[in-house]
Image (cartoon, rainbow over all chains, first blue to last red; front, side):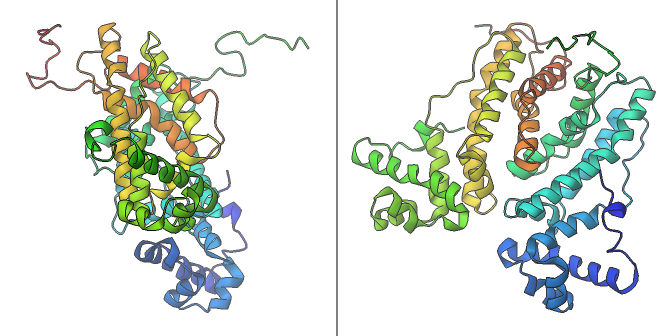
Length: 217
Length: 217
């Protein structure tokens, strides 16, 4: 679980290097949306950003490197999930953000997801971006446990995937028009299932079924 | 909700035309897996299928038309969801099939989903394919209602999206290795939420819990 701070200390010395990075990365999304993955070349990024192409090649290598760094840079924000006072409220707020992101105009997030089908580096970076987001959402589950809304041993990642997956399914795969009711519905569904113990994990301490199987081998 | 029978009567006269169709369509998946969307050309399909290129151009137009017809042809099968005797069992069986499809080798389903990000025709055809599958799964919900496992006014599509979306999320978007436990877990989650009324729709007769039980037959 590498925060962007940990992952890229050398790349964020501030000053000129950081400025060049944001100039270059700011050019990637719009080019991707406008011309698609095929139109996203290092030369096009250099031209649009005003940074010399040899600098871009040296630092990012290729389009995969550029896409990966866009996602890594996105991890560098200070985003935290909203604290609304209830599990369902927190998940609804999260889903509203997911839906807003997937329907934003220009559709940068959708374009990045589409690009992940063209580049292994982008796939890996997107997975890491989501892992980072899931980790940041852990407090949503911890708070719900504290409030007594959830069993203590609730798997936060499974709960979060269940809460958000229907939005990705509808908006990214089925590409149906956004349903304003879906964020709250999917949140309610996940909260109901979670309260019913759907994401409870057997704890190492033997929290559920006595795990005393002993390795008879 | 057009079944393939309704949608393509003219295209399935049997005999030579049907033979040509399957020869051509059988060439699409392997080419897509092997060379990607960029390597999938009408000429390549003609060459691999042994059907003359002018025939392919005349009948399918372009790659989008070919992809759409592959998906339309897939709707022509006789697939029905398994009847295991319980909602959770039916959803688990469905999810096992989804997971098997998304991890098959060669990865034709994944390649078709990836291609849907390149072609509007493929997107529309994929959406229709899934709509057809959701419709065919309606009996899973109807049977559960009959058994008293679910409220009568359960939205089958929402339940099915919730049950299957985590698999697509993990295998298509996050591209994590398949988790053998996930099909059953996601099925259990959806069944728990459904039993708790997560997918209950307000009925036209007044959204009440008192369902008019008329027309039992």
